[in-house]
Image 1 (cartoon, helix red, strand yellow):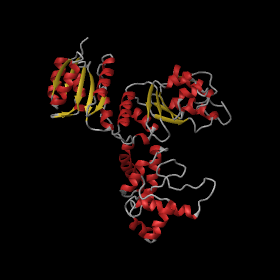
Image 2 (spheres, rainbow, N blue to C red):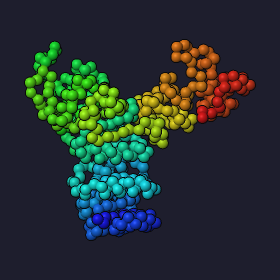
Image 3 (cartoon, rainbow, N blue to C red):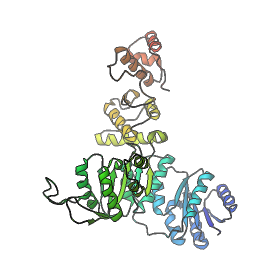
Image 4 (tube, rainbow, N blue to C red):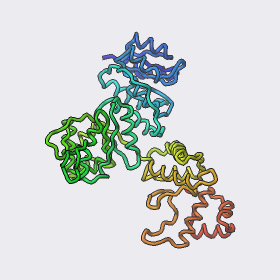
Length: 449
Protein backbone atom coordinates (compact mmCIF):
# COMPACT_ATOMS: atom_id res chain seq x y z
CA UNK A 1 0.00 0.00 0.00
CA UNK A 2 1.38 3.42 -0.97
CA UNK A 3 0.97 6.05 1.73
CA UNK A 4 0.12 9.61 0.79
CA UNK A 5 2.05 12.28 2.70
CA UNK A 6 1.35 16.02 2.74
CA UNK A 7 4.21 18.18 4.05
CA UNK A 8 3.05 21.62 5.21
CA UNK A 9 6.29 23.57 5.65
CA UNK A 10 7.38 27.01 4.43
CA UNK A 11 11.10 26.21 4.73
CA UNK A 12 11.89 24.99 1.23
CA UNK A 13 15.16 23.27 2.16
CA UNK A 14 13.51 21.31 4.98
CA UNK A 15 10.47 20.38 2.88
CA UNK A 16 12.78 19.19 0.08
CA UNK A 17 14.83 17.10 2.49
CA UNK A 18 11.69 15.52 3.95
CA UNK A 19 10.28 14.89 0.48
CA UNK A 20 13.39 13.00 -0.62
CA UNK A 21 13.49 11.02 2.63
CA UNK A 22 9.92 9.78 2.41
CA UNK A 23 9.85 9.30 -1.36
CA UNK A 24 12.78 6.91 -0.85
CA UNK A 25 10.38 4.92 1.35
CA UNK A 26 7.87 4.67 -1.48
CA UNK A 27 5.47 7.36 -0.27
CA UNK A 28 3.55 9.69 -2.55
CA UNK A 29 4.47 13.19 -1.33
CA UNK A 30 3.00 16.64 -1.91
CA UNK A 31 4.18 19.91 -0.33
CA UNK A 32 2.22 22.98 0.79
CA UNK A 33 3.91 26.20 1.93
CA UNK A 34 0.94 27.98 3.54
CA UNK A 35 -2.32 27.38 5.40
CA UNK A 36 -4.50 28.10 2.37
CA UNK A 37 -2.45 25.80 0.16
CA UNK A 38 -2.54 23.08 2.82
CA UNK A 39 -6.34 23.17 3.02
CA UNK A 40 -6.71 22.97 -0.76
CA UNK A 41 -4.28 20.09 -1.12
CA UNK A 42 -5.70 18.19 1.85
CA UNK A 43 -9.14 18.21 0.20
CA UNK A 44 -7.86 17.12 -3.23
CA UNK A 45 -4.99 14.82 -2.20
CA UNK A 46 -6.65 13.14 0.85
CA UNK A 47 -3.31 12.27 2.52
CA UNK A 48 -3.05 9.51 5.07
CA UNK A 49 -0.40 11.51 6.93
CA UNK A 50 0.27 15.26 7.29
CA UNK A 51 3.51 16.77 8.61
CA UNK A 52 2.44 20.22 9.77
CA UNK A 53 4.65 23.18 10.67
CA UNK A 54 3.44 25.49 13.45
CA UNK A 55 4.68 28.82 12.08
CA UNK A 56 3.31 29.38 8.57
CA UNK A 57 3.22 32.64 6.56
CA UNK A 58 -0.56 33.01 6.83
CA UNK A 59 -1.35 31.39 10.16
CA UNK A 60 -0.55 28.88 12.90
CA UNK A 61 -0.47 25.16 12.36
CA UNK A 62 -2.33 24.21 15.54
CA UNK A 63 -5.23 26.43 14.44
CA UNK A 64 -5.26 24.64 11.06
CA UNK A 65 -5.73 21.12 12.42
CA UNK A 66 -9.52 21.23 12.71
CA UNK A 67 -9.90 22.50 9.15
CA UNK A 68 -7.53 19.87 7.76
CA UNK A 69 -9.39 17.05 9.50
CA UNK A 70 -12.73 18.40 8.30
CA UNK A 71 -11.50 18.20 4.67
CA UNK A 72 -9.47 15.00 5.09
CA UNK A 73 -10.95 13.18 8.11
CA UNK A 74 -8.79 10.04 7.76
CA UNK A 75 -5.49 11.93 7.95
CA UNK A 76 -3.03 11.52 10.83
CA UNK A 77 -1.31 14.81 11.67
CA UNK A 78 2.17 15.25 13.18
CA UNK A 79 2.96 18.79 14.32
CA UNK A 80 6.53 20.10 13.87
CA UNK A 81 7.55 23.21 15.82
CA UNK A 82 10.56 25.01 17.20
CA UNK A 83 8.49 26.33 20.11
CA UNK A 84 8.99 24.49 23.41
CA UNK A 85 5.64 25.03 25.06
CA UNK A 86 3.58 22.57 27.12
CA UNK A 87 0.28 24.31 26.47
CA UNK A 88 0.87 24.25 22.71
CA UNK A 89 1.63 20.52 22.84
CA UNK A 90 -1.58 19.80 24.73
CA UNK A 91 -3.68 22.02 22.47
CA UNK A 92 -2.19 20.35 19.41
CA UNK A 93 -3.13 16.87 20.59
CA UNK A 94 -6.53 18.08 21.80
CA UNK A 95 -7.24 19.59 18.40
CA UNK A 96 -6.73 16.20 16.79
CA UNK A 97 -3.02 15.80 15.99
CA UNK A 98 -1.50 12.34 16.41
CA UNK A 99 1.87 13.58 17.64
CA UNK A 100 4.05 16.61 18.34
CA UNK A 101 7.81 16.83 17.65
CA UNK A 102 10.42 19.56 17.94
CA UNK A 103 12.61 21.33 15.46
CA UNK A 104 15.32 21.01 14.44
CA UNK A 105 13.80 17.80 13.14
CA UNK A 106 15.76 14.67 14.07
CA UNK A 107 15.26 12.01 11.42
CA UNK A 108 15.16 9.20 13.97
CA UNK A 109 12.51 10.93 16.10
CA UNK A 110 10.40 11.90 13.07
CA UNK A 111 10.59 8.41 11.58
CA UNK A 112 9.45 6.88 14.87
CA UNK A 113 6.49 9.29 14.99
CA UNK A 114 5.58 8.53 11.36
CA UNK A 115 5.79 4.76 11.91
CA UNK A 116 3.62 5.05 14.99
CA UNK A 117 1.02 7.20 13.20
CA UNK A 118 0.82 4.85 10.22
CA UNK A 119 0.52 1.81 12.49
CA UNK A 120 -2.87 3.00 13.69
CA UNK A 121 -5.99 2.55 11.67
CA UNK A 122 -7.22 5.88 10.25
CA UNK A 123 -9.01 7.92 12.86
CA UNK A 124 -12.17 9.83 12.07
CA UNK A 125 -12.09 13.40 13.26
CA UNK A 126 -14.37 14.21 16.18
CA UNK A 127 -16.24 17.36 16.96
CA UNK A 128 -14.10 19.74 18.99
CA UNK A 129 -15.23 21.11 22.29
CA UNK A 130 -14.70 24.52 23.80
CA UNK A 131 -11.41 26.38 23.75
CA UNK A 132 -8.65 24.66 25.67
CA UNK A 133 -8.29 26.04 29.22
CA UNK A 134 -4.97 27.56 30.22
CA UNK A 135 -2.32 25.42 31.88
CA UNK A 136 -1.25 26.98 35.15
CA UNK A 137 0.58 24.28 37.09
CA UNK A 138 2.42 22.03 34.64
CA UNK A 139 5.68 23.91 34.13
CA UNK A 140 8.58 22.96 31.92
CA UNK A 141 9.96 23.04 28.39
CA UNK A 142 12.18 19.97 28.49
CA UNK A 143 11.57 17.13 26.07
CA UNK A 144 10.53 14.92 29.00
CA UNK A 145 7.78 17.30 30.13
CA UNK A 146 6.56 17.90 26.59
CA UNK A 147 6.18 14.14 26.26
CA UNK A 148 4.15 14.17 29.48
CA UNK A 149 1.92 16.90 28.03
CA UNK A 150 1.23 14.78 24.95
CA UNK A 151 0.32 11.83 27.15
CA UNK A 152 -2.04 14.02 29.18
CA UNK A 153 -3.87 15.12 26.04
CA UNK A 154 -4.10 11.58 24.65
CA UNK A 155 -5.26 10.19 28.01
CA UNK A 156 -7.97 12.84 28.25
CA UNK A 157 -9.52 11.58 25.02
CA UNK A 158 -10.34 8.16 26.48
CA UNK A 159 -11.88 6.71 29.62
CA UNK A 160 -9.14 4.13 30.13
CA UNK A 161 -7.53 3.72 33.54
CA UNK A 162 -4.30 5.67 33.96
CA UNK A 163 -1.33 4.83 36.19
CA UNK A 164 0.95 7.77 36.99
CA UNK A 165 4.35 6.88 38.41
CA UNK A 166 7.17 9.03 39.70
CA UNK A 167 9.04 10.02 42.81
CA UNK A 168 7.39 11.95 45.62
CA UNK A 169 6.97 15.62 44.78
CA UNK A 170 7.04 15.29 40.98
CA UNK A 171 3.43 16.46 40.54
CA UNK A 172 1.40 13.29 40.02
CA UNK A 173 -1.84 14.82 41.29
CA UNK A 174 -1.38 17.85 39.03
CA UNK A 175 -1.18 15.53 36.02
CA UNK A 176 -4.29 13.65 37.18
CA UNK A 177 -6.23 16.90 37.53
CA UNK A 178 -5.14 18.04 34.07
CA UNK A 179 -6.29 14.78 32.51
CA UNK A 180 -9.70 15.30 34.14
CA UNK A 181 -9.76 18.99 33.15
CA UNK A 182 -9.15 18.19 29.49
CA UNK A 183 -11.54 15.24 29.39
CA UNK A 184 -15.23 15.39 28.51
CA UNK A 185 -16.31 13.94 31.84
CA UNK A 186 -18.94 16.12 33.48
CA UNK A 187 -18.53 14.92 37.07
CA UNK A 188 -16.14 15.97 39.81
CA UNK A 189 -12.48 15.24 40.36
CA UNK A 190 -12.35 13.29 43.62
CA UNK A 191 -9.02 12.45 45.26
CA UNK A 192 -8.13 10.08 48.07
CA UNK A 193 -4.74 9.18 49.52
CA UNK A 194 -4.67 5.44 50.13
CA UNK A 195 -1.74 5.79 52.54
CA UNK A 196 -3.30 8.51 54.69
CA UNK A 197 -6.35 6.57 55.97
CA UNK A 198 -6.28 3.47 58.14
CA UNK A 199 -7.44 0.29 56.43
CA UNK A 200 -10.61 -0.09 58.50
CA UNK A 201 -11.85 3.34 57.41
CA UNK A 202 -10.47 3.30 53.86
CA UNK A 203 -12.93 0.64 52.68
CA UNK A 204 -15.83 2.82 53.80
CA UNK A 205 -14.25 5.92 52.24
CA UNK A 206 -13.86 4.18 48.90
CA UNK A 207 -17.07 2.16 48.64
CA UNK A 208 -19.41 3.82 51.16
CA UNK A 209 -21.35 2.19 53.98
CA UNK A 210 -24.90 1.50 55.10
CA UNK A 211 -26.48 2.70 58.32
CA UNK A 212 -25.41 0.49 61.23
CA UNK A 213 -22.55 -1.14 59.30
CA UNK A 214 -20.20 -0.40 62.22
CA UNK A 215 -20.13 1.56 65.45
CA UNK A 216 -20.74 5.20 64.68
CA UNK A 217 -22.39 4.57 61.29
CA UNK A 218 -25.58 6.43 62.16
CA UNK A 219 -26.40 7.15 58.53
CA UNK A 220 -25.70 5.66 55.14
CA UNK A 221 -22.85 7.37 53.33
CA UNK A 222 -21.80 7.14 49.66
CA UNK A 223 -18.15 6.38 48.96
CA UNK A 224 -15.64 8.20 46.77
CA UNK A 225 -16.57 6.00 43.80
CA UNK A 226 -20.10 7.36 43.94
CA UNK A 227 -18.94 10.94 44.55
CA UNK A 228 -16.89 10.71 41.37
CA UNK A 229 -19.86 9.57 39.26
CA UNK A 230 -19.32 10.70 35.64
CA UNK A 231 -16.04 12.23 36.83
CA UNK A 232 -12.60 11.07 37.88
CA UNK A 233 -11.48 9.19 40.99
CA UNK A 234 -7.81 9.76 41.79
CA UNK A 235 -6.28 7.03 43.95
CA UNK A 236 -3.01 8.45 45.23
CA UNK A 237 -0.36 6.14 46.73
CA UNK A 238 -2.17 3.11 45.34
CA UNK A 239 0.89 0.99 46.11
CA UNK A 240 0.10 1.33 49.83
CA UNK A 241 -3.40 -0.15 49.49
CA UNK A 242 -3.96 -3.05 51.89
CA UNK A 243 -4.17 -6.44 50.19
CA UNK A 244 -7.66 -7.17 51.48
CA UNK A 245 -8.86 -4.01 49.72
CA UNK A 246 -7.01 -4.78 46.50
CA UNK A 247 -9.39 -7.61 45.66
CA UNK A 248 -12.41 -5.40 46.25
CA UNK A 249 -10.95 -2.62 44.13
CA UNK A 250 -10.19 -5.07 41.33
CA UNK A 251 -13.78 -6.28 41.34
CA UNK A 252 -15.07 -2.70 41.28
CA UNK A 253 -12.91 -1.92 38.24
CA UNK A 254 -13.93 -5.08 36.40
CA UNK A 255 -17.65 -4.91 37.08
CA UNK A 256 -18.10 -1.14 37.52
CA UNK A 257 -20.03 -1.94 40.67
CA UNK A 258 -19.23 -1.29 44.33
CA UNK A 259 -20.50 -3.01 47.45
CA UNK A 260 -20.96 -0.57 50.37
CA UNK A 261 -19.79 -1.81 53.76
CA UNK A 262 -22.71 -3.50 55.47
CA UNK A 263 -24.79 -3.49 52.30
CA UNK A 264 -26.54 -6.48 50.74
CA UNK A 265 -26.49 -5.23 47.16
CA UNK A 266 -24.07 -3.58 44.78
CA UNK A 267 -24.27 -0.08 43.34
CA UNK A 268 -23.31 0.75 39.71
CA UNK A 269 -20.64 3.40 39.31
CA UNK A 270 -19.19 5.33 36.38
CA UNK A 271 -15.95 6.89 37.58
CA UNK A 272 -12.79 7.12 35.51
CA UNK A 273 -9.89 5.80 37.61
CA UNK A 274 -6.48 7.46 37.73
CA UNK A 275 -3.98 5.93 40.17
CA UNK A 276 -0.56 7.16 41.25
CA UNK A 277 2.38 5.62 43.04
CA UNK A 278 6.09 6.05 43.62
CA UNK A 279 6.47 2.26 43.71
CA UNK A 280 6.95 -0.31 40.95
CA UNK A 281 3.67 -2.21 41.21
CA UNK A 282 4.91 -5.16 39.19
CA UNK A 283 7.97 -5.53 41.41
CA UNK A 284 5.65 -5.28 44.40
CA UNK A 285 3.58 -8.07 42.83
CA UNK A 286 6.71 -10.23 42.55
CA UNK A 287 7.38 -9.52 46.21
CA UNK A 288 3.85 -10.64 47.10
CA UNK A 289 2.76 -7.16 48.21
CA UNK A 290 0.44 -6.24 45.35
CA UNK A 291 -1.95 -8.17 43.13
CA UNK A 292 -0.51 -8.57 39.65
CA UNK A 293 -3.97 -8.66 38.05
CA UNK A 294 -4.81 -5.34 39.70
CA UNK A 295 -1.52 -3.84 38.52
CA UNK A 296 -2.38 -4.77 34.93
CA UNK A 297 -5.90 -3.41 35.36
CA UNK A 298 -4.53 -0.06 36.57
CA UNK A 299 -1.67 0.19 34.08
CA UNK A 300 -3.73 0.56 30.89
CA UNK A 301 -2.19 3.99 30.16
CA UNK A 302 1.13 4.67 31.87
CA UNK A 303 2.52 8.16 32.47
CA UNK A 304 5.90 8.46 34.16
CA UNK A 305 6.98 11.80 35.63
CA UNK A 306 10.74 12.38 35.53
CA UNK A 307 12.50 13.56 38.71
CA UNK A 308 13.63 17.17 38.73
CA UNK A 309 17.31 16.19 38.58
CA UNK A 310 16.64 14.69 35.13
CA UNK A 311 15.14 17.90 33.76
CA UNK A 312 17.40 20.60 35.18
CA UNK A 313 16.76 22.84 32.17
CA UNK A 314 13.28 23.42 33.59
CA UNK A 315 14.57 24.75 36.93
CA UNK A 316 14.91 28.46 35.94
CA UNK A 317 11.35 28.43 34.57
CA UNK A 318 10.08 26.67 37.69
CA UNK A 319 11.90 29.13 39.95
CA UNK A 320 10.29 32.10 38.22
CA UNK A 321 6.81 30.59 38.37
CA UNK A 322 7.07 29.35 41.97
CA UNK A 323 8.46 32.66 43.25
CA UNK A 324 5.65 34.54 41.52
CA UNK A 325 3.07 32.19 43.03
CA UNK A 326 4.57 32.45 46.52
CA UNK A 327 4.73 36.25 46.31
CA UNK A 328 1.07 36.41 45.30
CA UNK A 329 0.10 34.32 48.32
CA UNK A 330 2.11 36.66 50.57
CA UNK A 331 0.63 39.71 48.81
CA UNK A 332 4.08 41.15 48.12
CA UNK A 333 6.22 41.76 45.03
CA UNK A 334 8.20 38.80 43.73
CA UNK A 335 11.92 39.00 44.52
CA UNK A 336 14.49 38.26 41.80
CA UNK A 337 16.99 35.50 42.44
CA UNK A 338 20.74 36.11 42.41
CA UNK A 339 22.81 34.16 39.86
CA UNK A 340 24.76 32.42 42.66
CA UNK A 341 21.51 31.32 44.28
CA UNK A 342 20.15 29.98 41.00
CA UNK A 343 23.42 28.13 40.45
CA UNK A 344 22.99 26.37 43.80
CA UNK A 345 19.49 25.29 42.74
CA UNK A 346 20.68 24.06 39.36
CA UNK A 347 23.27 21.75 40.92
CA UNK A 348 21.19 20.36 43.77
CA UNK A 349 20.09 16.72 43.39
CA UNK A 350 16.44 17.41 44.41
CA UNK A 351 15.41 14.24 46.23
CA UNK A 352 12.15 16.04 47.09
CA UNK A 353 11.65 17.24 43.50
CA UNK A 354 9.39 20.21 42.70
CA UNK A 355 7.77 20.15 46.14
CA UNK A 356 11.21 20.58 47.75
CA UNK A 357 12.06 23.41 45.36
CA UNK A 358 8.82 25.21 46.20
CA UNK A 359 9.45 24.91 49.95
CA UNK A 360 13.01 26.24 49.68
CA UNK A 361 11.96 29.19 47.52
CA UNK A 362 9.08 30.06 49.83
CA UNK A 363 11.39 30.06 52.87
CA UNK A 364 13.92 32.19 51.00
CA UNK A 365 11.25 34.69 49.95
CA UNK A 366 10.09 35.08 53.55
CA UNK A 367 13.63 35.93 54.64
CA UNK A 368 14.59 38.12 51.67
CA UNK A 369 14.81 41.68 53.01
CA UNK A 370 16.73 43.54 50.34
CA UNK A 371 14.53 42.69 47.38
CA UNK A 372 16.72 39.84 46.12
CA UNK A 373 17.10 36.17 47.01
CA UNK A 374 20.81 35.69 47.66
CA UNK A 375 22.72 32.42 47.88
CA UNK A 376 22.84 32.46 51.69
CA UNK A 377 19.02 32.25 51.74
CA UNK A 378 19.02 28.96 49.81
CA UNK A 379 18.99 26.42 52.62
CA UNK A 380 18.70 22.73 51.87
CA UNK A 381 17.47 20.28 54.45
CA UNK A 382 20.53 18.71 56.13
CA UNK A 383 19.25 15.19 55.47
CA UNK A 384 19.12 15.77 51.70
CA UNK A 385 22.00 14.29 49.72
CA UNK A 386 23.29 16.97 47.40
CA UNK A 387 26.44 18.25 45.79
CA UNK A 388 25.55 21.62 47.29
CA UNK A 389 25.69 20.54 50.90
CA UNK A 390 28.02 22.22 53.34
CA UNK A 391 31.66 21.07 53.24
CA UNK A 392 31.61 19.76 56.78
CA UNK A 393 28.64 17.71 57.96
CA UNK A 394 28.63 16.83 61.68
CA UNK A 395 27.75 13.38 62.87
CA UNK A 396 23.97 13.05 63.11
CA UNK A 397 24.30 11.93 66.72
CA UNK A 398 26.34 14.95 67.92
CA UNK A 399 25.97 18.70 67.91
CA UNK A 400 28.41 20.58 65.64
CA UNK A 401 31.50 22.15 67.17
CA UNK A 402 32.24 25.86 66.88
CA UNK A 403 34.89 25.09 64.27
CA UNK A 404 32.40 23.12 62.20
CA UNK A 405 29.84 25.94 62.38
CA UNK A 406 32.55 28.49 61.48
CA UNK A 407 33.67 26.40 58.51
CA UNK A 408 30.12 26.04 57.22
CA UNK A 409 29.42 29.77 57.56
CA UNK A 410 32.64 30.86 55.84
CA UNK A 411 31.99 28.44 52.99
CA UNK A 412 28.50 29.87 52.47
CA UNK A 413 29.90 33.42 52.37
CA UNK A 414 32.55 32.41 49.84
CA UNK A 415 29.86 30.87 47.64
CA UNK A 416 27.68 33.93 48.07
CA UNK A 417 30.46 36.27 46.88
CA UNK A 418 31.53 33.98 44.07
CA UNK A 419 34.89 33.43 45.78
CA UNK A 420 35.74 37.16 46.08
CA UNK A 421 38.00 37.32 49.13
CA UNK A 422 37.73 41.09 49.65
CA UNK A 423 33.91 41.02 49.76
CA UNK A 424 33.99 37.89 51.92
CA UNK A 425 36.27 39.65 54.43
CA UNK A 426 33.87 42.58 54.64
CA UNK A 427 30.91 40.28 55.34
CA UNK A 428 32.82 38.17 57.87
CA UNK A 429 34.56 41.10 59.55
CA UNK A 430 38.03 39.54 59.40
CA UNK A 431 41.30 40.40 57.68
CA UNK A 432 42.53 38.94 54.41
CA UNK A 433 45.34 36.92 56.08
CA UNK A 434 42.85 35.55 58.62
CA UNK A 435 40.52 34.45 55.81
CA UNK A 436 43.39 32.80 53.95
CA UNK A 437 44.36 30.86 57.09
CA UNK A 438 40.80 29.65 57.62
CA UNK A 439 40.40 28.62 53.96
CA UNK A 440 43.56 26.54 54.28
CA UNK A 441 42.63 25.16 57.72
CA UNK A 442 39.13 24.04 56.72
CA UNK A 443 40.06 23.16 53.11
CA UNK A 444 37.30 25.44 51.79
CA UNK A 445 36.51 26.15 48.15
CA UNK A 446 36.32 29.56 46.51
CA UNK A 447 33.55 28.39 44.20
CA UNK A 448 30.73 25.86 44.60
CA UNK A 449 31.71 23.60 41.73
